[in-house]
Image: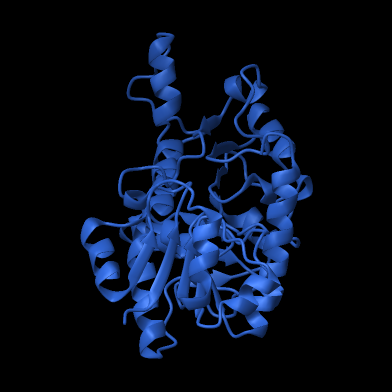
Length: 343
């Protein structure tokens, strides 16, 4: 008999996560229940749990009693993008159930957006587009005070995880000098200089905020560090606003000291009269770095890979594997962000 996989993917759509052939391969490998682009009835999940080998859900909910009943369960896989409350993680770890996150599956689309923001900010594309509308465009102007090339540029990453690494890979043709601050990374490779945050903010022309929100990094890029940025530094915020002192960052941009490109905000969606909508030196994107057709289908590829690996007894994983300390910190941060108004 095939192993049983529960797929409660709503709010995600099945085709958002899986290419057709990937999903077909998953169905060849497992007896898949769900995948209906609507919430699975809880009674159906409860009936399947005692025999299920995998539980894939946008927001997994299992109590300690559910975990005890799920005697065959090998892994839970969340497909929202973050570890959240609702799953008894301690019970999962105690019973040897792997806890996996799809967050690495966003890396391609988000890295592509980060690169686009760097080019747009460095070459003044948005600013000159708007200048055309007011008939103040600057023909053949180098824009010395703001513009820069990516070639041989010094670029810093705050957080050097999957998204930062993929962004770095995309930057390779530009031969950048890359620095990174990440207290959880001991060796980033010979082409990355791991450094202290104070050094990074003072030396880099572009800074990419790509850290995963945790209890330890709320407001990590704070007002004091923002004040140390080089004139006209471009700050790209591509992970979460949680990691930045957002008012201080926007105040520096409005004062003409730096440039900012951001896909995320402390409050989402922005109010219609929010001052950010008319802020100077800012490129705004409505939290859609991964929102492109096919942009999340790497997640399905990773799910298929890891399900195969688990069934084969291999330790190779492409999804993010959680441990108790990491999950506790990430769930706490997610809970605090969810409690904020309009977040």
